[in-house]
Length: 370
Length: 167
Image 1 (cartoon, chains in turn red, blue):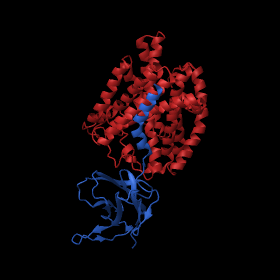
Image 2: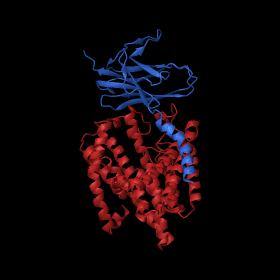
Image 3: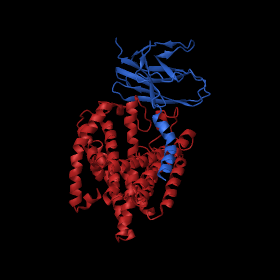
Image 4: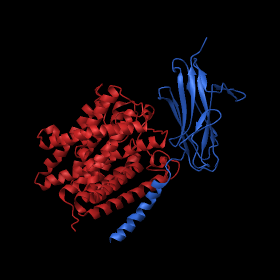
């Protein structure tokens, strides 16, 4: 039996996982628009009236780390594939930098305004897409380094970040807010500061070395994914139990939902490690399922092949229809959010299939960056 | 080799599985309504913390008695609705810090004031207090709610109404 996966299958799990994270994100965004809890929910200091509301919010915690790690993995793959095909080192890096710049611009001129249905043009703040773009640009600086060095850089950033969060700054002073919230802290200007998310992108690049090259058999990918995820989970749990460094929110008991719910904006070390573990374990699960029941996860490939298109389009539709036209805006609860997500999925899947065909046949520069 | 891998990974995953399968929510889903109209989400573990909410207009400066205790308050200048949240700790040896949030919510479901109180293990505090202004320039008539959260989980809530002054 040949355990070496074929070319397409090697990346099938990446597409499927990205699509799965996209669907989770859609559920989270559907909740943002349809769920009345958001009249009161402060994402920086969340309180939950029921376990259902907690679960609905918490499943979205996987999205940003999932996308950042997959972006890191794809940067690693894109760079090495191009260099191996004969592209010069600088050209391979420049290709990634262009995409990073495109994402930052897209955040500012499209994504920011789409949340409100384009009622107001709001270019002057950043977000997850800009954070991914910046992380991609920064990754080009270290993409040629060995995975061990990259891992060391990621760990160093994660270890230092809790200390950097102690830097005092005046949120009323624009330049200090912009500087701190671009890189370290989260706030009105940017919920996704680059530094902790860059660390996760690096970890994605490190994992890509194994997933896409070094671990040449299914079994090795599966074992290594689960083993790495387990070790990272253990570190995360030890840090959480310590209740000190690496934690931001306190918790009640081991296993309670406050145990899992540390700060997301910006992520505490505990949340970063737990997210990393969850992403790696889930990718492991996707590889297993892809091996035993390949058709089961195919549906996730549809948004997973065009994740950026999926992101900006579903957000624009929800923003215009629900927020701008006020259709059921924050009138429902958990069930309404899930129904909203299901309806959006029915709309988005054909659109993603269509755009994927367009992208494959188009030579347009902007479409190639999507 | 595969068997060894299986065993190693299974051992590594044990603590995580224990976490996942342990109960996430520490409160019962269906609240009970106590005699003074406070909805209480009782703890699954009976030795865990529970609270009761009393709403009133002011407290006697000498007697300490709660004046105008109830659930209907008249909007008037320089007035407040105050809450006293009695903390019941059946197990007085709780060794961890308790994180409470008190959230005042208006008739549109929006938070008008939120306060976080951390009670330290050696703190003798047996109640929390909070208040919001009910002057006409700040509040509209309608049905309001005060909610108490422990470690971000809803543990009690009480509805009250603000009415306009009638002449």
